Image (tube, rainbow over all chains, first blue to last red; front, side, top):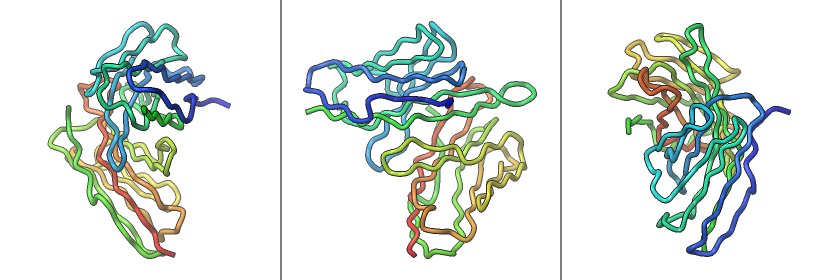
Length: 117
Length: 112
């Protein structure tokens, strides 16, 4: 089945440790994204990548890092510099549609809930 | 970043009622998307809109791309308990490439 896989579903880490969240897609999508969601709030963009070996900061990139060495994979590292890392992290990938290929549709993974203790 | 104003923030309705929610912005959007998120899960794409004035249905859900390109509406008819969740709008600016801007979400509760 084609889809976006995030792992693990739940992750616990001690304060001060870096942690890497996995995101893999087999949809052959060019663009991939990482969002953070806090309780009762919307989605905030951390990083996104429109092609392999290229990525851009989103609105809340501080304390996070990413890489995009393969089209299928876009791992997110939550570093010790992130002051409040406990949150629900969502990965997405997108396809461009329309005759002029200018309409984006994004599809999400099931999320990783990170708890830092 | 750009902001989308989504309203209402929450709705409490009886089963069988119709629901309407909307997103507005001061910017012009190229694409409007509507998602539903259930607790502990990722958002699921419900409807995608590409053209101003476009009206698209998906079962009991209907969404419209506003004529001004600055707003979009989602209607749910004859609500049922499994409609419970958070509904998000997302828009793509003409100048933002693949980047999407999300609304804050509408929390829908349906009482049987």
